[in-house]
Image (cartoon, rainbow, N blue to C red; front, side, top):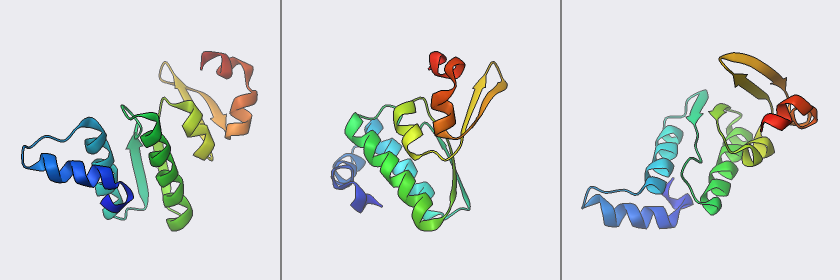
Length: 118
């Protein structure tokens, strides 16, 4: 998995001795650990949280590739709607603990009430 992110691999090698891994490295490392376990369902909580745009795109691409290559189901919670809607097949919106929308990304973009909130 580290081969997907050579700069993270280098950072891990340098910082492991000191016991310090920057946020980007921790986030990407946790995604890598999840991948090694080969579950039937991945649950990801804000996989792009705290990452720079270039890494957000890499993580989104990897999530999409996981689904396409392994046909593994992926449920992820994400505040970055731009990236999420590009790879999502189904969208659920919760507000105040209630399901306020369920549909595909195209339907989500057409719902005026939901679109205004985001």
